[in-house]
Image 1: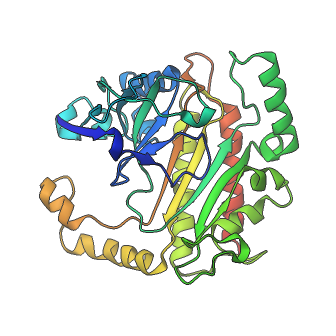
Image 2: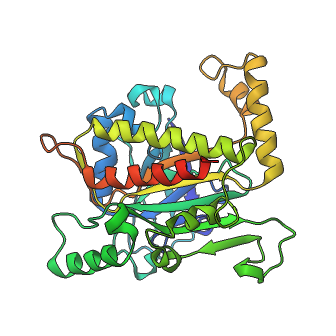
Length: 352
C-alpha cells in the first residue's frame, strides 16, 4: 500500500467542477478531488464495496480514503496522508476494480478548509478526479431526480427543493442541468459569448434552471457545441462520443434496475475531450493499441504508464450525501426517471 502525503501549502482549489459546493480541493497534479462531505457519503462508498455492488461500482469514482478535518490551522508542517491502493494491493477490491475500496484508511493530522460556508463538516472524501486524463475536459453535471430530498430532510428543506423541482425540468423530466463548462480553444476571444481567458465558457445553475421541457435539448447542444436544432454528423468523433455516453447510460440504467437503493440529488458527470486535436489523437491511439498487442491485464505497471491511451470520454454517477442501499424497497424509480429522460435527449441528437 502506497502512501500519498500532502502539505497544506500543496493543496489547491479544485477548478474542474461544473457544479457543486465550494471548498473542494485538489493536489497540484490534479489527480484527486478532496471534497467536504457527510459521514453518510463515506458510508455509502464503504457499503458499495462491502455489500459487493460490483456492477454499479464501475460507474462511481474511485474511493481513495478520507480526510479528518480539524482546527489545527497553524500547520505549515501539517500533513494529510491518504492511502492510494491499486487493485493488486487492495486485494479486496470488488470485481478487480478500484472503483470502490473497502476499509480505506482515515487520514491523520489534516487541516480544515473553509468549505465556502456551504458544508459545515470536519470530514472530506478523497476521490479520483475523473477529468484528470483529459487535456481540455468538457464537463456536464446533470442532477437526477424529481424528488431531491431524503427522508431525514426537515419540512422547510422539502418545501424549498420541491419548489426548485416544480420550476425546473427536475419535476417533468427527472433531471436538470446543474452546470457545465466547454472549451472553445486558445484562440477564443475572452469576453465573447461569456468565454473566459482560459478559453472556457461556464454555465451555472441558473442556466440549467432556465431550461424547460421544450428547450432542454439546447443545453445538450451547448455542451456538444452544436448549432441550435443541429444533429450529430453520421461520421466523426462527436458521434462516437455521444454513442459511448448512450451505451454507458443504458448500462448504468440496467445496473440500477437490478439494485434496491435510494439516491437523492445524485448527479451524472459527463466528461469528454474538448481539444479536437487531442480527441482525434486519442481515437487514433485506441485503434492502434489492440494492433500493438497491449493488454492492460497482462502488462506491468511500467508498461501501462508508457502505453496508456489518452481519454476520449467518461461518465460517472457522483454525489452520494443522500444515498443508501434499501433492501426490499425495489429499484430507485426517482433516479431512473432522470436516466431514461437523459437517454431520450441524447438519442434525439443522433437522429438525422
